[in-house]
Image 1: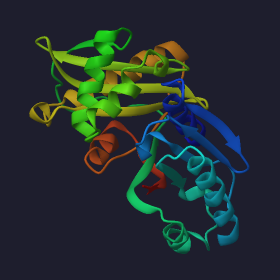
Image 2: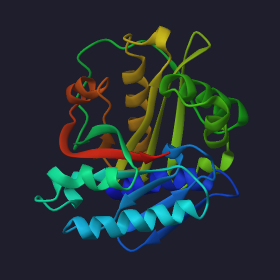
Image 3: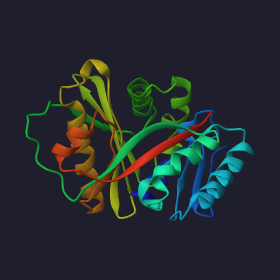
Amino acid sequence: MEENLREMLGAFGRAKAAGDTRALPGLAVCSSGLQFAMFNGAVLTAPVEGASELDERIQAAGAYYASRGLRWSIWVCQGWLDRDLRPKAAETFYRHGLHLVVELPGMEAERIETSARPLPELEFRRVRDPGTRATFNHIMSIAFGIPFDISLQIYGSEKTWGGGLTGWVAYREETAVATAATLIAGGVIGVYAVGTLPQHQRKGCGEAIMRHALECAQAESGLQRSVLQASAAGFHLYQRMGYRPVTRYAIFAYS
């Protein structure tokens, strides 16, 4: 899951010529070059034994992004933190000016369960040209509240879509309604960017496109196991699809 997430954050670093990804001691950092914390993400890459070690890694990430004058975020997998550190870790982030944005369960499924309900008939188009990139961006901007001009520089860039990252747009009677993306890395299929326009939510569109994206990734890679970081809105759907929580992520941001 961690390796897959690092590759996903790395896609943001590929989007623009000013982007960058690199490994630091115990950290992987990516920079999109944009003033948007969630597109400049750091992740831990080795266990953290205590508060002083966590301090060092936060300082290293902060120095990297400060040298570029960028807002940034760090995705912290609970599994990397020593058990004694976990209850106190948030205090360490707060001392460095980082605030908690959201906590997400990390989930995995060995296989996807058959849908228990009929799903809508949709047309699925792969993101592979300016039109589908623009449509994917439109839905992402609305569904996740990302400023349109910022989102466009990521999802509208041809350079984002590569390295195992595949995007899909679902259409209902020629109207784009939902998105999903998969990334093959770390021996698993990562599921990302599952979003549905508000007026088409609660109709099965998100589940339908997610299943299609997974089926295509499974056929391409031969893999069955998939992972994701679940929003509160999607948690119960993912459970019905066969996912189970295996860890938790806390995302802190410096702005």
